[in-house]
Length: 127
Image 1 (tube, rainbow, N blue to C red):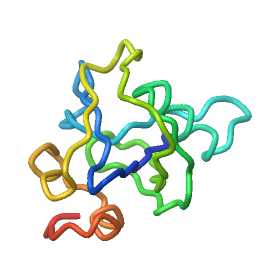
Image 2: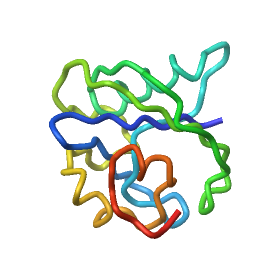
Image 3: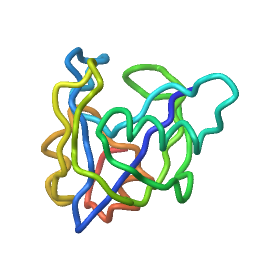
Image 4: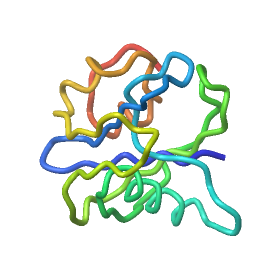
């Protein structure tokens, strides 16, 4: 299973761009695969920090789905920003940025999971 973190700070949300597209995905929220004997909470916090240098705290699971493009089982987590500046150390990432929540749809090439849209308060007609 893959865990994804939705980290917000000052009306911005953290997103990452991978060097290699995953299906139709280009920009996405940080996350990755759960390692052996790791909980979803541990995994999402670890993945966010490994990918972006941002320390966070997992607050609540928004839900799970099979991603329509990658066909992977994904669990989505609201994460509270704790500290840190963006520092990419993950060899698979090209860039990580804070983007204004109102501009998020400009970056995504696939529909964003509707509970994320609701949580961020974005007006979107896609699921």
